[in-house]
Length: 238
Image 1 (cartoon, rainbow, N blue to C red):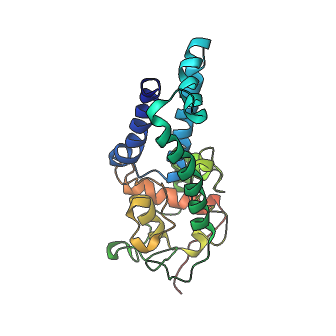
Image 2: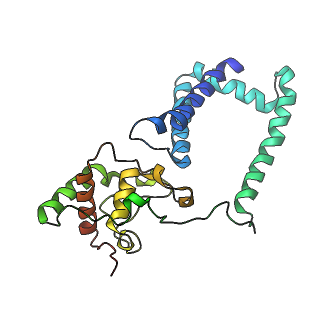
């Protein structure tokens, strides 16, 4: 039984380790959200099942041990393990369900702020790029290349948006960038989700830090393009 299932288990473990511990340490990358890791693991599992059922022989070799374990047929000393799995698995599912749905009077572990204050060196920065049609056009071009896969047409509905939780920001919503100064956007684009302080939980996103790939001038132009494309204006102190 163990031999036929050992390789798939090892493969799933390797995929999880790469997604959880290797990918976040790649330069320019960021930690993947748990929902995306779960999606990749499900895709890996689906691929394993499809490969294992390509022929009748491989199908029997893959499903046979699982079926015998669940029915208790010819598993010898594994009966105790079978009973433990059949008892503990429903209990675990019930405990997880209860823990996710039960109300609690306990305060949050830390203060939570949707838009935490940026570090001092980013506070009060002004956009050094002049707001000209050329700069806005260039900014929209950079946005299309680097930002639109997630943020879409400034509406947070890019082709990759469904794989992220929390979802990418909708810049057309008046409660997003219209409430923020340009210096705040510069900080968020430059440092990404990993640059948020602890009070930014649970709004930490998988947005990468772009400080390596994008020069500061490009980031400022992207900000001009974002505001123009979303038909918003940055917040200013009057």
